[in-house]
Structures are given as C-alpha cells and as structure tokens.
Length: 82
Image (tube, rainbow, N blue to C red; front, side, top):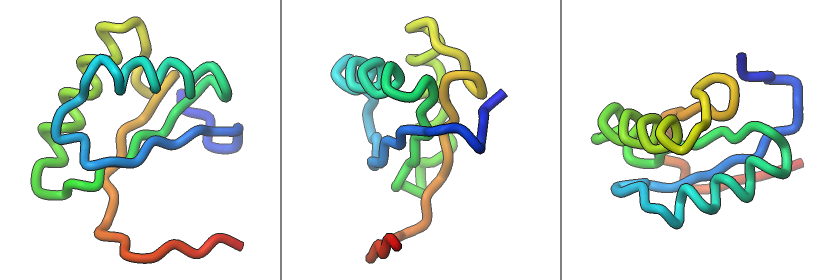
C-alpha cells in the first residue's frame, strides 16, 4: 500500500508516451525513496495514459500502490512552496 506519510519522489509530465527512458528515470527515482507518485498533466487522456504507465511499470517488475501511484493533475499555472 502506498505510504502517504513516507518520503516520496514525484514525476510530473504530460506523458503522451511512456518511453524506456521514462522507465529508467523512474528506476533511478524509486531507488531514492522506494515509492514514486506520477502526476499526469494531460486531463483529456488521463485514463489511457495512466493505464499505459501502469502496464509498463508492472512489466518492469514494479507494483501499483506499493512502488508507485499515478494521479491526474489539474491545469496548474503557478507553484508556491513554503
């Protein structure tokens, strides 16, 4: 189960395609915290994209909800971090 209170790395992108380079970057980030939250900034194709990412990472030996989650992201135009 995804551990919401544990350190987490995030990946943000439109992810119109998920490539081997994306999987390699995921592996690198996963080593840092043990879990990655992937945010999809493409609300029109969110469902299809999330299924592709899930399939590619599952094929690579990772487990949804244990190693990663894929979430839809609103149309963010500014970020403020305190």
